[in-house]
Length: 176
Ligand SMILES: [Zn+2]
Image 1 (cartoon, helix red, strand yellow):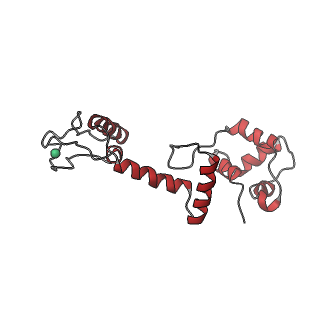
Image 2 (image 1 turned 120 degrees about the horizontal axis):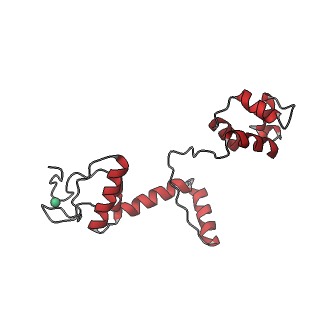
Image 3 (image 1 turned 180 degrees about the horizontal axis):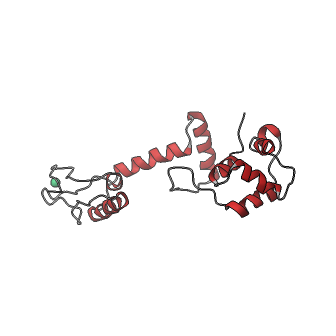
């Protein structure tokens, strides 16, 4: 299996340095380094050579060490489980070819869609959604439709993922 040394590849593509800059920086500690050798370090699985710590330190000293988060989803949820549940989950994931990311997102979305926040809580959640996305906030602050007096927001998911402009029950607009 060909797996590239992703950490190095990502690091080099994140920093504001040309490949010549990279070679010159590493040359300060390893005078004979060349670009083809660095390229081989990016494929250490194939070439069996890796960039030494001193070289990485030289790059970090010059260009900073923090890799930026390349994923467009920046929030991470983690949970701890027992060894037994972990073993069962790994077996399940392998049998059904699903990954944790996909499974969690589906399950969490499901839970958020099927459960109802307190009306006031829902209104506050919607208000934060509007703030994050620069949208006007229309839902009544007590979270109740002023027309039919039912909860103005259907679920945690709706409250935090879409702009609510009318009542889900009577359809009366909140923005008139
Ligand atoms: Zn209503």
